Length: 218
Ligand SMILES: *Cc1c(COP(=O)(O)O)cnc(C)c1O
Image (cartoon, rainbow, N blue to C red; front, side):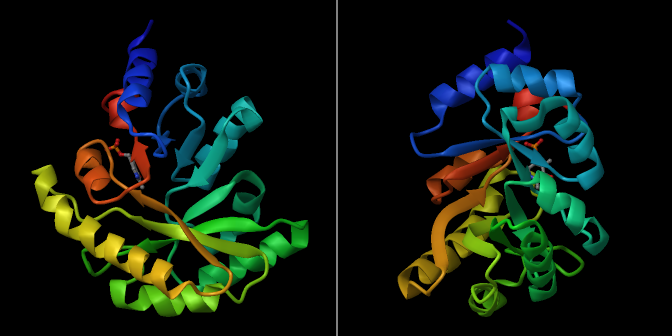
């Protein structure tokens, strides 16, 4: 067995039931990605539409495809063909464009709102206080379906320092759940990467996005 297989097996053992593993596949070859799938990975996360297209042409529907990177407007038409879930919606403009492109191909796209949980300027994601208004607006669009929240959080050295950002995101998630708004289903809380996923799980994540831990250093 290669290290990718070993890593995936170990992770699938370790992750609590009900937690979805997204293999963050940026920079990995189709052969590496296939190995992860054969070891049990069911969801791939891609940051760039062009890279996703290349991997998708080799791998197709053997896994589900999540968009985990910032989406440019001119890539949305292609993106809605490939992706099964877009984790990085952070403006109503983007939601509306996804909705429009999905309507053209008769698809309903599940989306997550990306939360800028560190309130960092120049970073993608919606500021925490704007998530609920965005969710309400997105819920009026027929060809997208809001199913949860995603966050990255600021880059930190000590994983423990990620905790406050995960708490912030989980609190908004719980509030949206409590509000029980029409056309919104708060099902997925996507938080945690290689450095921070254990903290994220403690704070309620049920979707973790792992690259390095599966494939090794980039
Ligand atoms: C690269 C990436 C990950 C995975 O990062 P690792 O530290 O390699 O686990 C998770 N989420 C997003 C959005 C990424 O770009």
